[in-house]
Length: 544
Image (cartoon, rainbow, N blue to C red; front, side):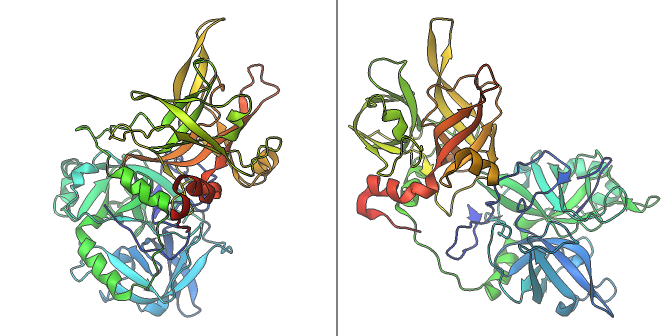
């Protein structure tokens, strides 16, 4: 998909993935943050985005023509006009098409790029210019899922009202033409708001009034950013809780006859994927490779049990939105001596072993619920106080929490569900000064946590089982009490939080008079899940 811009631009139909640590719509590349609009894409940021090339006679040189969205190991969804000969109205011969997945630069084929020939082309039987503009390409060989090649999800509810999308930002990516009328060598992205049918029609009644129907929708902010030539076929993706869902396909936009380029003062039109679900399922069923479903871990099954208690208010807000799984852990009657923990089962709280060094945690306090005594503290058997490794502890409660829609444990990440790319939220209880002599513990929540990867984390943490993060929240002025606090991804669709780490330590900046942390170190749950499950559920553990 290409973008023209005034400045330099830039439940779910879940594919049955093989036994591997990949889920549709969940990124695995975890070092770059999303930007709001119009910038270059990081490697692995849109792992479901594919490039379609035409082999040009007589020498077979490749020409990039369109984008597409990976839906399974062998299926790429695109626009029909990308694969149909305009003169003959027939699909191009499959021998002329080539698909690249995991590619960031058009001119560079790196080791993570997977190249596939096409074996079949399915064009919607009712396709005509600007109508039913959808096609499926079947690859001759299945792709291998990697951190750079992952399928997108599709919402399987065909009755989804398109009005639910109005005003929401959808994300598009592509290598299309830039404002300099050149094909971009680097994959770029932008966010565009979906608009109503009425707004779209008013924008250009002569064009849109006869073409807009329930099979398409319009999007754009009319500020100079728009899909352009070469962007066709790519998807419009929406963040749905903890994963990305394909809801649209770039179909067409109005051309400025004088400039011979996309008119960015007009909306762009996208195929409404929901209206073609039956056709998509039928096509994929014909060529679906056989895959093996993995068994669920016990913690996943328990997470599903917790989800069954979820309730939303009429305004769509989750009743457990205040993170009641984040608990206050005190060492006795003194409320100034405390740490943070996270409820992961009605009878168990997860925290760190370092919090037990000076005294034993005695009480867990849950906001709006009350206090429960701690019966037993179980430290990780390989905890090293000096090296600060394997710093996890499970607190067994004297009596179970009575679960309800507003008192729910958090889920725990495993190799299949860990999502480190999108917003990561820290919740904690911290000590804040009221004056020079007194203070109080307050609940703290922040999504301003940037993952630090690669060698920098190795230097800071020197532990592959630790996640390094930089918290840039100006409101975080204190740190006392934050040890044991959870780092989590949020799924606003299911109202559940998934814990990816528990804070084990923080390193302060020696040059900062206030001692603001340079980096937070979190014990990575996925690396310790076997031990945690063994403590809580004993022999019911099922490893992935």
